[in-house]
Length: 111
Length: 354
Image (cartoon, rainbow over all chains, first blue to last red; front, side, top):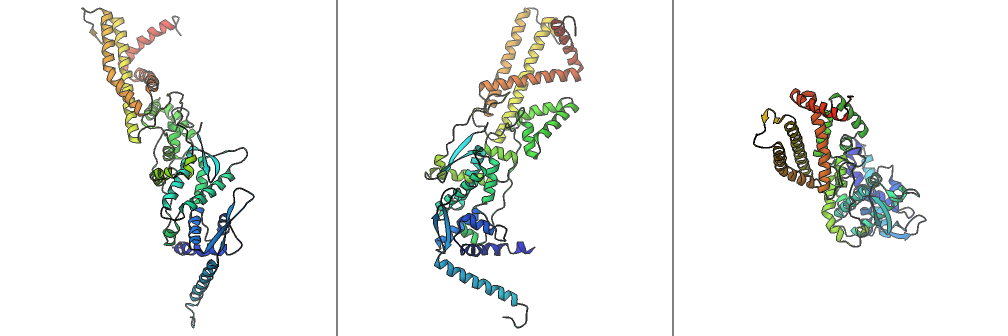
């Protein structure tokens, strides 16, 4: 089993983290998020993204506002709420901790 | 000719061909089913519709106003299956696309004749032209036997009349039976939801399809097995009728020329014309139930009475010509009968000989 397969469930679990991270920058709409994730290990599709975004909004981690676009109808631009930002900080801290632990395992004197 | 369906996706009108419409309906139906317990279902579906609409607008241009089935399938593939995020968080893997059960259908769209070769081509994923070439070569090698195979298939293999059958004929992975079934199950529910796109989907009544040899198919056909059975009955009855018809012609001709049929003399008490009328009446009695069964079978295949007659005439003609030719080639006794008829016929149309 190659690492790609092995870590598939992990990547799925981390998708929410990855999306929060994308949204933490300047306000983005759905297609921007997909484009940003395209080519990374977290590449995903509308069918997955939209239900996930709606849940994040229900959990009050993200919010959106409608913005006019030059082409076509107005779009939903997502950004993090205060709660979302705090949640992302928690996730990042936890992830760094995990990485540190993994790096130190197998070395003497590590935590 | 293809029918175009106009739909309303998030307030904008789009034109899709029928197969594209069915694919979209299946996708949104499956999405709606998948999000059944999601409180934001309506909003997510509207976002999905908007995303599909955006992708449609990329495909279309000033000179292209209708989204084709292929394009719609590419768009829906790009969209991906709709996974509810709750199920997703638990690590439920999205199901891989299921291969539909492939079935052999005749495809009248793009057919040269009855669509047998197009159907075979779709089934084996090869160009129908190649199938046609193989068929012609096979017909030459087998001295026409392959043509009989074609005729039999023309009646036994059902033609694909709906988009689902069309997809099954191609074994398209996207239109997986599962998705179609889900969509069908959900469709009643969805249709009631007046705020959604179905309201504005205007589906005009099915237009009759016109085939060069067989008349318009009027009503939707029955299931695959039933249509196969009806095809067998129709062709067997038609064959029997044609054989009886030929027999009557032979008997009448034989009585007329020799006063006997295969060595049996007509009764002396009857005048010749009386015997001939008797034979014709008797044959009419024998063919009556056959004709009724054949009409019923053609009815099950979707033909009306006139269509049934047209199909039969054509079928009988081919069988007569083919049967006489085969008998002449391979059956000496039949040759003895046919040859004088042929000579007599030739003497009438070309007294000087060819």
